[in-house]
Amino acid sequence: MTNFLFAYHDGTPPPEAPEDMQAEMERWKSWFDDIGPSVVDPGNPVGMSKTVSGDGVADGGGANPVSGYTVVWADSIDAAVAMAKSCPILPSGTIEVAEIHEVDM
Image (cartoon, rainbow, N blue to C red):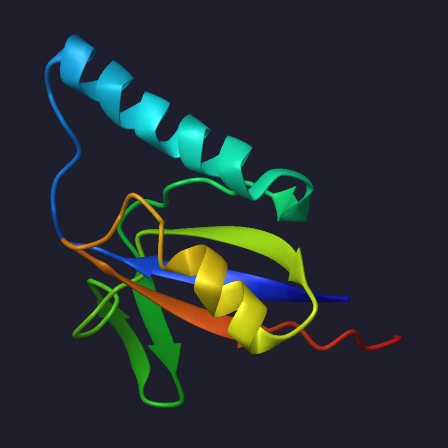
């Protein structure tokens, strides 16, 4: 089994009304319950980002900034992708699925 990163991309603003936010959080909790022990780190949404390069720093995170992350444990990238297909961020956003390579330092 390997850890995989789900990097979420979604420009949709979060719900403003408390009841809408609660409903959204319930959708995510239900999804985490569905994928069960595969969730290594449920992650969190992230705020505005900056892109650091050799040329300097740019605001806004680029063309498709990350909006949150989760780490899951799966047998293969295909198994991780299968989990991602039922994520509540879809269909408004996208998910990058990438294997996390363990490196000893």
